[in-house]
Amino acid sequence: MKSHELLREVFHEGNPKQIADDMGLSLSMIYKWAEAPTEGGSGATNPLDRIEALLKSTQDPRLVQWVCERAGGFFIQNPKEHWAHPYYLIPATNQVVQEFADLLSVVAGAASDHHIDKEEAKRIRKRWEQLKSVTEGFVHCCEEGNFVPLEKKLSEKPQD
Image (cartoon, rainbow, N blue to C red):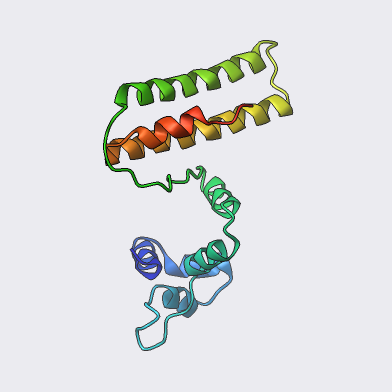
C-alpha cells in the first residue's frame, strides 16, 4: 500500500479536521497528503514519505524504533536472507526455546534480590530484543521452509 493510500483510509475513518487542528495545519494540507503525487501534481509530500526518505538516507533503525515506541509497540527487523529448503526444524525450534530460557535466566538473576536496577533492566531489554529478533527469524524460516540460516545465525549469537 502506498503512503497516500494509507492516509486516505486513515482520514476516511478518522476526522481530518481534528487532525489538522491537532497538528496546527490547514485542512487542505491534510487532504493533499492523501493524494497521489501524480494526481495533477497537487499531492504534497506526506510525513510517511518523509520518514521513509529519512530512513533511506540514514539507514538507522532507531528512527523506526522511536516511532514504534510512541505507538506503544516495538520494531523487529525482518531477516535479510532469503532461504530455499528446509533441513533443521527440530534443532531450530530447540534453539528458539533456548533463547527464551536465556531471557528467563537474565530476568531471574536480576530479580533475585527483589529489585531490578537500571543496568539489569538494560540487560533484560537487550536480551528481550535479541529474543524477538531470533523469533522473527524463526517465523520467517517457517514461512520460507528453510532453517539452515537460522541454525548458523543462532550458533554465532553474541554473548551478554
